[in-house]
Image (spheres, helix red, strand yellow):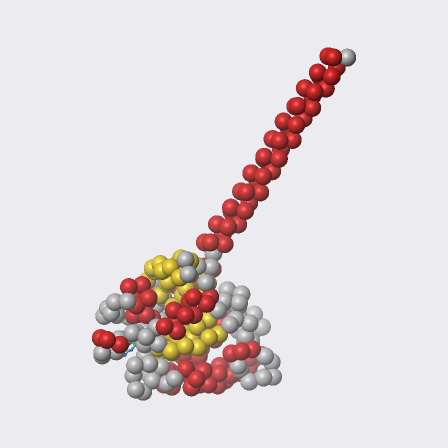
Length: 246
Ligand SMILES: Nc1nc2c(ncn2[C@@H]2O[C@H](COP(=O)(O)OP(=O)(O)OP(=O)(O)O)[C@@H](O)[C@H]2O)c(=O)[nH]1
Ligand SMILES: [Mg+2]
């Protein structure tokens, strides 16, 4: 009898050991899965992309964000990449060239990690360039990565210039142009191949309106340079937007 109880106790001990080992393995596995998910969350979606036509001021804004310094800029032929910290979150600022032959390549390179898009506009030349400004924006907003509810800031830059248009006027100009563009794109789609990648932005039967899009579209004003060194920079609205989206 004594022997039997002893073997039973020993058996129970082994069973308990087995349970403990299984529990430890399961916990380790769960921890591993959580760690991988956490790493993925951290690495995905940390890029703030600065896009816009050439000469709109992206590279100067990029430099201002990173080190506040004024630098003489030249037409970018490749991207600029740098890190900043906003609300204890590390963000990768990527300034891509506005050149028509280069911009898609760089957008494609970074779009899978995008957290926010800043679309920089030269507020002085906007009326003259409205077609190109609207078309590039339309293409970016149609992209499947941007359509995953990526917040977009339309930054009306060069506000230090007396001829600069304000963000309210620019919004109206853009909505009008995007409406025309959408009509052209829709008729092209009907007339030609159905495999076209044209996307209908906004609500069918309604005038184009930024508020109809799934992505949150914000408008703000800035200047990255003026002649007075005391007041040579005004990118507060950009900084506030960054704090809001992180
Ligand atoms: N007055 C004024 N000039 C600006 C402002 N921001 C940029 N600039 C000037 O505009 C020119 C173009 O600026 P960049 O930052 O090089 O333009 P970009 O958008 O990077 O152009 P790409 O690299 O060709 O795509 C430079 O001469 C800048 O000094 C601004 O807010 N006000
Ligand atoms: Mg540049």
